[in-house]
Amino acid sequence: MKAILSVRAAGFLACIVIFVASNSSCTNSAEDCAYTASCGAIAIDAGATGGSPGTSGSVGVCHACTADGDCASGTRANSVRCVPMNFKGTFHGYYCMTRSSVGSCSQPYTSLFSASSISGAAAESYCGIDQNLTTCEAVVDLSAQKSCTRANNCGSGSGDGLCQTLTAAPGLRCTIPCTTSPQCLSGQACSAPANGYCR
Image 1: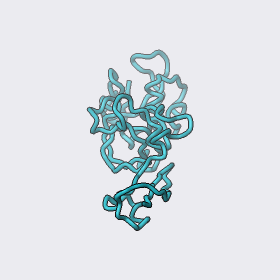
Image 2 (image 1 turned 90 degrees about the horizontal axis):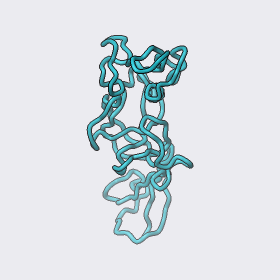
Image 3 (image 1 turned 180 degrees about the vertical axis):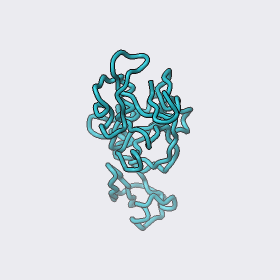
Image 4 (image 1 turned 30 degrees about the horizontal axis):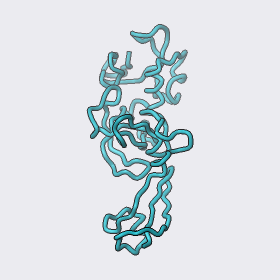
């Protein structure tokens, strides 16, 4: 029997016709491509069996990705997916983020947001960052205690990162804007509720 595989990669959807033993009664390929339950379409993530070349299951939280299969899920399968993120209301890219349904969200990923994954997983809640204040690039620099001389050395260089003296590290280091301490790394505090930074 004919079956339609819906393959999604880097935001593009393609349908591949294959012949398999199946009980599907669907005859409409467009319906299959739309993932309708009545058709029993087989939806697969282009990264499900390998992700992007060289990145399969190895991309950490808040790092750029091109498929769900890129993301390292640790001991819980599919707990991290590749989802779209914004910065100040503008699309910024796709990043591996943890589904909030798999456990409590730990610092600095305490700002929940809803998104569908790049590989077609339905919209759900993810542990995230305040996308009006910062980006994943800036959070990664904060986590790495990256040295800096000015703010545009941090994050994407677009106002998402700051260069400040931190409590636990000598010299100037990359940090992020914040309004509350849970937006910072564990053990850090937000310097102020308005125009603050993690220190």
